[in-house]
Image 1 (cartoon, rainbow over the protein chains, first blue to last red):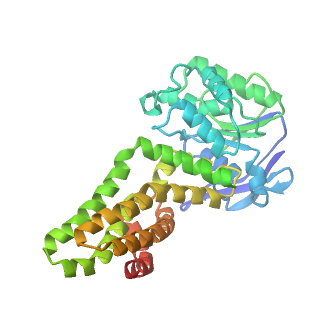
Image 2: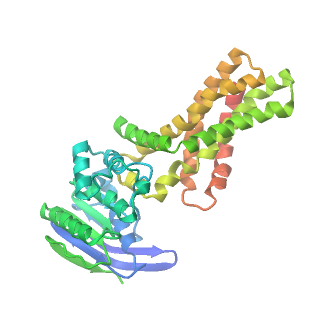
Image 3: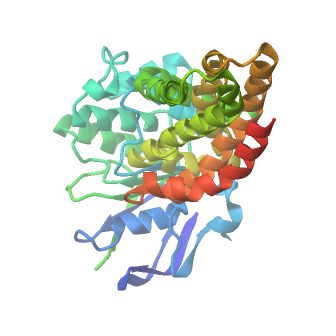
Length: 204
Length: 181
């Protein structure tokens, strides 16, 4: 269970938001909304522990995420608006390397299966610098296919994807929620998540 | 624990192999600096022998500096660094892995190249051996101290110059002990 209370964010001299709180149970999704610059990405980074709030706290299963440290990070999967893929490596190498760095084991079959799911089979041995923007995004998203961590934090996951891929990703998030997982995401697109309870939080 | 370090090191080494121009430019810099001195000073074996350790050490130090700004910058730019920070392993191990990889592609080749360049300075076999061993011991320190500077200047404009200002004073003890060996 993820719980945040009274969060405040200050950027430079400007206060982006204050008094933000939410509560998320297994199987629920939090949909962050707000115009550009309203602090959506910052809030996502706070949930991950990458940025510290000026005030307020975030709790995971009753304990603050700062105190949990590695225990919390073991259950967290973050996908930022940067793809976190290496241009010199192939999609297959990127996928297996990121799994290893996250402390997971991913067999080659599983990795190929994930790349097939994102429609990159046949490109798995091509260096990522030759891929299009949308394909690079798909490489980054392929991490989610076999992701078993409980909390997904996704920053604009639908950007640069075509219609079919958007529907596929929505299905993937839905399946994750059905397994009892949680997700926090931002998007400017209207996307229908097929399963799970959706909560909305508007930053203004 | 070892698994984390090897995973990070293996990935960085693989990346370095795909981008060999970076490794080669560091080594060429070292070769050129070390070769210019004998040419500039002229054929005076005694003087060259005396200068050799200092020149080679300063060359190795500056060559290491050259590769430092990219130690974390590439990972920072493409978002991989965030993922490394969020990985459930202790961050210290990840950094050790990256420093190890940096040493393997810069410090180690520099130390192995040094005896060849030392020949230009008319060094004896014993002196060449001492020089190589001192570089083998000293260059990991250069990578380690350099990583602190690279981390502190990450994301800043003109970070490269700042790294030099931060790190060069800290390199002085290594240089004195290394060149004095």
